[in-house]
Image (cartoon, rainbow, N blue to C red; front, side):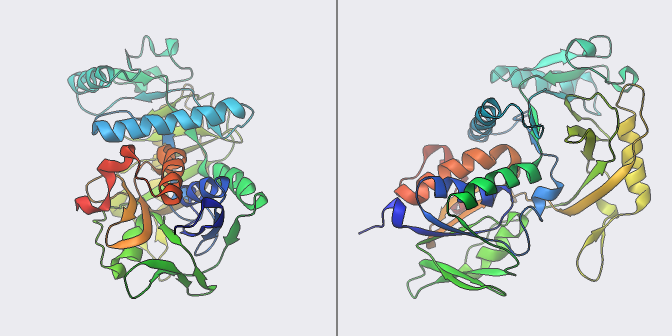
Length: 372
């Protein structure tokens, strides 16, 4: 006889936004949940994610539908907590480095899906969003008014408050974790390097770019395309920016405290690792990214870095999420995906439902590990 939701013991490995969301949704439904993290919450990929909430551009219809559901859950959260300065829906502005035909093709595709998409340029951009440097805009750009952003460290703290006050158990500084299986290959718990072992009826592996490494000893191979990424946070500055900007040399968004955060990929080859495995990047690269970002803002304010975080950005080998129970390891579930910010709330909800009911959700059918 299967356990009821109120008596099921679930262990979740990973306290980034995905693991915290899954744990919180499980706890909401009455499960006994232990959330286990190698160091501290939000210390991995969630600390260096731009966290742009969107489904812009071209992707599979299944992935688009999941992302749109993800945005919907954030809108519900936003409606309930409009005072939060760490979650906003002020749109996104995009232009590429190709000619106008590429932007037009993107716009045409987006509108074919009913995704709110508007062509704009320097003379009209102020009709959509303020404080953009007109001289920086390409001949053709796209404004998507339904997009937004979230500060993941703030969201994680918000969810953890609910999780712990509701009886969820958070285990920090646990060191490396492994999934324990019985003789039949069924997941029965988690072993950790520093915090001991924990028994469980089901285990969730939500370790961002390290998820493939955790499930590999179980005989499961997940192709890993995770690149190194960096997020720079500025000192407070009067910038007036509302939208998330995605441009050929910088991606920028507002951040709590009147700061900005920014990233891109043109400097990936310049990352190095120190003896402790931490990623480093030359200060000149950070200065260049700040300068490129300033060019996008009206008045080109001087931007100064308050700090930066770098590490691997989780992306499965084929780009699509990997979600759900592993057929080879009953009782072991994975959540490995790019767009972890956009998907965090909806994946937490749907995976919690699968774990506690045993019924697979149709929206996750395209994202099972067995496709590899």
